Structure formats: C-alpha cells, structure tokens
Image 1 (tube, rainbow, N blue to C red):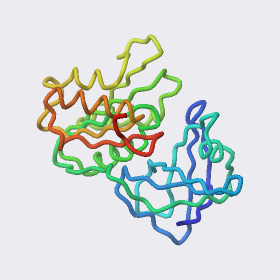
Image 2 (image 1 turned 60 degrees about the vertical axis):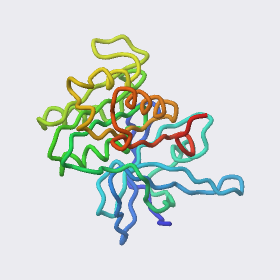
Image 3 (image 1 turned 90 degrees about the vertical axis):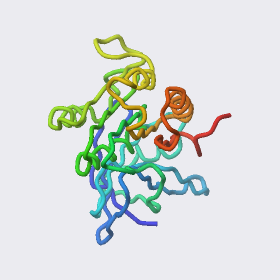
Length: 236
C-alpha cells in the first residue's frame, strides 16, 4: 500500500473528476491498462475499489479519472477529496495490458471503461507497429471523457483512428451500442484474425461484445477483457 497526496483535481465531465496523486520517493511501475485500488475507512469498515491510471508508469505520480455515482461509496468519497488530502493506493496489477505491439489493435470502451484503454492507446502510440482503432461509447457528447486527447491522437498519428458512438443523442456520428459498430467494421477496416481486441465497460457490455466477436470469427485468444462496476466479468 502506498500513501499518496492529491496534487490537483480537474473536472473532466459533469460527473467525472481527474485526480493527480503523488507519492514522493516512490516509483509506480506497471503495465498501462493495469489497475490500482483506492482504500479508506467508512463507518468503521475498510472500503477498497479498483481504478485504472491513465498516466504513464515510471514516475512518482498516477492520474485517476473517477465517475461519481450518487449511491456510490468510493466514488463519492473520492469526489470529496481536494488538493493536499491523502489517498491510500494498493498494488497495481491486472490482466488488461498491451500484449503484442506488432499486431493491429482495436480498443472498445464504454463509459469510464475508457481509462485502461486510454492508457493502452498511449502505450501503443509509443511502441505499436500496426494500426489502432479506438471505439468509445457514451450517452452523449457532454460525457465523452478525454475527447480532446483522443482527437489529437487521431489527428497526429496516421495509424490511429477514433470512433465515438452515442446511445442517447442524435448527432451526425454513429449511434447505438459501440460493439455494433466494431462488428460492422470486421472484414473491412478490421481483420478478424489479425487484430487484438481490448474491451472494457460494464460487465454486460463486455460479455455481449465477446460473444459478438466470437460469432464474427474473432479467435477467443485475441480478445482481452475487463469489466468495471462488478467483481468480475461473467454470465449470470
């Protein structure tokens, strides 16, 4: 466990804040896409919740983007933090990280499931040798996290293509569920047998996406997943 201090707080969307946490003298080493845990006591009980840094490893800081849920525990507690407050973090680990930078990749994110995929996209921009497609699903444009950064990646790197999919807003871009557009691109913009797929979102979205990809001919070994707002991704 590492004790950090809040260096800055920035509101990213109406219900998401970004926290820059620093631990002087400590170096955070991890694979981009892996997660830490925030730990604290509430009403005499220890609370522990996972969050994924969007920052690069190898420094004494991590950056966490956290969505506030009105009935949440950790998210509400974190949104009450301000500069100078202490936050305890657990070790960084997890199975969601870039496997092979020599292959083409497709990142599929919904909501704050963008945090590990954003970290992996940054890693791929540094090390990747193929093409990266990034699909980000949200309810509306107001809640798109890191849109400015993603637009910059799309503009600056010829091997990066970003697609936004909105489920509750009429606009001139794609609408509906993000996985529908990924499956629709298979065979045209995406090689189902030559691409690694990284999927993160609510467990139901992750399960549905992996099933759709399998039905479309994507090998199971080329799909890497993680669900948030749940202990694990599993069919009920």
